Image (cartoon, rainbow, N blue to C red; front, side, top):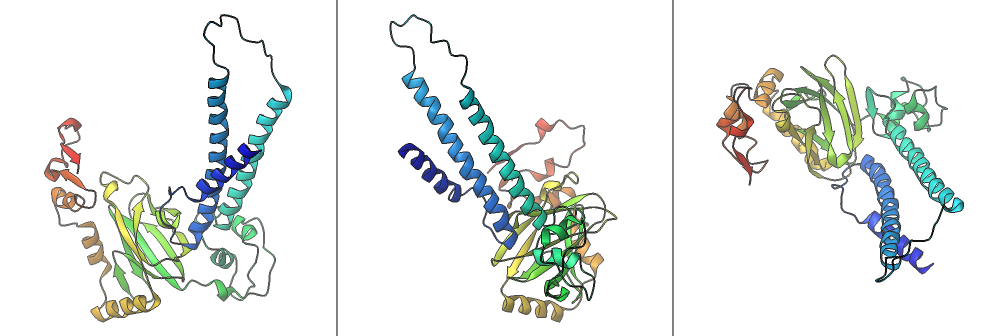
Length: 327
């Protein structure tokens, strides 16, 4: 019993203090992290139990010096076999139900519009004037019209809407309410944000690791992401879909401002005047640069000691001749 208590306490502690995930910067990240922490708790307990039993067996039941006899003939233990079959089945089923609940509450079943916020999942299934459901799982699944409650549809309206265009190899953000065009995503903290995602050439993916959300960007099909940032700071935006030779350099930044700083940024950009989108695209993709000049921008962020002029070579060039090493 004492051993079971020690294993349980150790599993609970490590499940909440493993430090394996990046900082959680959104309300949606807390949902994902709770599932991950539960899996780490269960996994740690099983690891300690199984590996502990193996170590005890190796030490206690090892062949002693001078022992030349065969070991005892054991055909099996039905209750034990039932136990170690039933317990994993129960654990897997429980995790499956829990993960599916989180997946649907984040809008995972609505493939083209992942509304990663419950209030926007409600909004997505309500036309103007309709009541909004308090059953986000039903709404997200699209399996029927959810029951209505006393909330109005405007409760879930996004505070900030941003159009994001992906191309080889950059993201360009347009703020339709203000006409601002920028190479970074600027949003206020604790406000509902909706990103309308489009791709210009090939499939890309808009991934926010600290927010635990990702959505494909498909040419000719608009997708979306909806989330609420809960922590001020600057976070990476990463393309998570192989989109070409320089896919690894397709990154941007998402900057979460305080409400005052965000308003100041908006007013400052408006005062600078509107930016033509084609100009912004050319700047973001560095269209006028040669390949070595383009690649040089990634040497410092990726901490490489590299001769960039050697990278853009003919496809037939042997890869071994491209010399680089981590800093």
